[in-house]
Image (cartoon, rainbow, N blue to C red):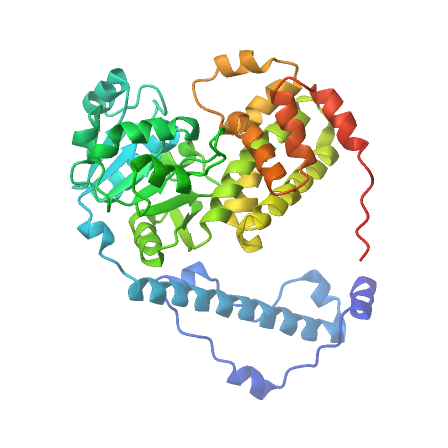
Length: 432
């Protein structure tokens, strides 16, 4: 009784509803089969002991809770109705009219994307262009990529080949999943087989070390066609979780709104949500820089510097990415959204991240050469770090955390010394 009376001191008085108002409130009709089972009906009586002991105050509180629950239920049902209505209005025949998709590269993410698209349509031809004859035979005969994600069986409509002419012939969309540092030479070698109107969907994240270019610049230049249709796909996503059909959300960005929408329709599924954006620069630069920040996060973990340090470092790194990104023309909303902050969270805090694991081992005292020789996949942050600092100098942006990572990778600074120097930087004032 005392607790209930004390609670009323902090809660605004809620008038007792009149009977006629209660009668006037009408529950909306169910919007899907089984709605009554999914949303339990509101109880006429609340069995809370506190309410029974609350005397005159109990009835207004029960009524207030019921009203809030009703408001939440109605808001949710409106959201579901809007979602279904939007899907009906925006049905597309992109998947129906797509006959063939090609994936360049047979790494984990390229394999996962090939499997995802192939599973959406049984008669869709999905061709994977690979360098390794052994992997080709494994995919074609056993429907397994024996090198990456070997525990997952691939759809039977995936065909692997080492012939660029065969892979690209008649393709409607092309997924580029070759590591950034090898992309230019690879694309130049297959350029004669590429249709000038073939849309390229880039899955590669990073900066070309010598030129500081992102994939939106690398692909048209290497193919000799500055009008080559381009889309970048990015966001917080691990290949193994895509293969396991776990809920995932990503972003496609293109200067061509219709093309972005077409790729959205091609990829969207019950387990993969796709948003569209026109901010190609923001999506690409966030995808490149987050890998370097993930190495820093791994170093903190490897040195056992604690959660306070981890939070401070990642927050600082996010600011540095925002500073450089906006100078390059990225939208702040992109950098704080799914392909920015969302991807940073996944890459910095989850053990599946290759870049984080590189940092973890550096922080534990291993040498970079030893780490890289033991990996069978590319950690783009290692090669991107130097390019990031060159970009920072070009745009006159101070990036202490990411610069420290580049110095550690170049073996010019130890992780311990880097932490000491960062902690001794001038204190920051945020007064306006």
